[in-house]
Amino acid sequence: MTAALGALGRPVLEALAAIGRVALFAGAILSHILRPPFYLRELGASLLQIGWFSLPVVGLTAIFTGGALALQIYAGGSRFNAEAVVPSIVAIGMARELGPVLGGLMVAARVASSIAAEIGTMKVTEQIDALVTLSTNPLKYLAVPRVLAATLAMPVLVAVGDAIGIMGGWLVGITRLDFNSAAYLKNTVDFLEPWDIGSGLVKGAVFGFIVALMGCYHGMHSARGAQGVGRATKSAVVSASVLILAANYVLTELFFTS
Amino acid sequence: MITLSNVHKAFGANRVLQGVNLSVASGTSMVIIGGSGTGKSVLLKSVLGLVRPDSGQITLDGQDVTKADRDAFLARFGMLFQGGALFDSLRVWENVAFRLMRGAKALPKRDAREIAIEKLRRVGLKPEVADQFPAELSGGMQKRVGLARAIAAEPEIIFFDEPTTGLDPIMAGVINDLIREIVVEMGATAMTITHDMSSVRAIADNVAMLHGGVIRWTGPVGEMDATPDPYVQQFIHGRADGPIESVR
Image (cartoon, rainbow over all chains, first blue to last red):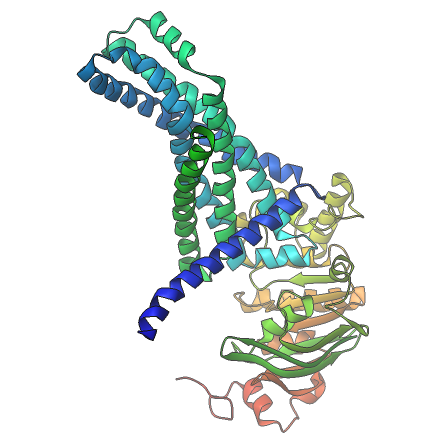
C-alpha cells in the first residue's frame, strides 16, 4: 500500500517541483526584461530568427488550413442549407483559434527546438560558463532577448497567418465552391469583430512567450553530451506544444465564456 | 593570493573534493595535476564561483569569494577553457573583445577590435583570422583564440583548463610556451590544471597533486621529480603499478 502510494506520489511531487522550477525561471526572465544592460543586437538577431524566418512555415500552414476549413464548413453547412456561413466561420475560426494555435505549434516545432539545441550545445561546450567568467549573465544575454523577441514577433506572425488563412479560404471559396469574390470578402469583413482578431493576437503573444521560455529552460538545463542536448530539444518541443494547447483553453475560457 | 581551506564538494554520492587546502601566491604559476575525474575542473570552477562548494572557504587576497562583488571579482580573472568555449555565433575578434565591449568600462567597437587584433597577434595569429568564425579554425587556432580572449582585458589571474588537450605535441609545445611567456610578461597569477607532464614542466612554478579529493603533495616544480610521494611518482612516470588504481 505504502509502495503504491509512493509510486503515485513521486511523479506528482516531481511534476510540482518542475512547475516550480519553470515558474522561478520565468520570473527571473521577467525581472530582467526591464533592467539594464539591454542586449539590443541579440534582440534584433532573435527577432529575425524567430519572426522573419518563421513567416514561410506559418504562411504555408495558414493557407492550407484556411482552404481546408472552407471545404469542411461548406460540406458541413450544406447539410442544413448554411453554405453561406463559410466566409464568416473561416474568418472567425482563423482569427480566434486556428491562426494562433497552429501558428504557435509550428513556431514551437521550429523555434523551441532550435533555441534548446543552441543553448544546450553552449552549455555542454562550456560556452555558458565562459559567459559567466566574462561577467555576463547567461540568462540575460541568452534567454531574455529570445523570450522578448518571441513574445513580440508571435502576434505579428499570427496576424499574417490570419490574413493568409482567410485568403486561403477565399481562394477555395471562389475557385472550388462557386462563391462570388466580392460577396465572400464582404461577408468576411461584416462578421469579423475587432476582438476576434485582438484575442488571437493576445494568444499569439502568450504562445510566443511559452515557446521561447521552454526552449531556453530546457537548453539551460540540458544534460551532458549529444544525448542530453537531444533530450532537451525533444522536451522543449513537447512541453511548449502541450502548454500552448492548455493555455489556449484557459485563454478561450477567459475571453469568450464570461 | 588565492587560498582554499578545507573545501568539500559532492555530486550526489560522488564526493569529489574532500577537504582541499591550497595556497597560490600572487604572481606565481600553480599547476594542479591529477588523473581524469579527480575533481581538478571542479576545483578551478569552485574558485570562480561556477560551482558552489558544500563547505570550506575560498579567499582571494583575504576576501571570501562568495561575498565579493561578483562583477568586480570576475573582472580580475581570465580563463582558457578546455575546448576553447568560443561563441560560435560571433566572429573571432568579437570573441576576443567580448569583455572589452561590455560593462561599465565598455570600449567603442573600433578600439575593442584593435585590441582584439593586437591580442591575436600576441598569440601568433594573423589579423585576417579576426573576421572568421570559430568553426572555420583548427583546434590549435581555437586554443590560441581562447588564450587571446583570456588575456584581452589584462587580468590579474588567469586559469587554464587542460590547455594542451587534443593538440599535437608541437602545437602543445607552442601553447605551453605562449602561456609561460604571457604569464611572465603580464606578471599574472596563473592556475593551470592538466595531466600533460610537458605542460607541467613548461608552465609551473609550483605543482599540486589532487587525488582522492585532497591535495596529496604540493611543492616547487623543481622538487617534483625528487619527492618520495608514491602517488606523485606513479603519476609523473605514468606507471600502471602503484597506489593509484588503474583500470585495465
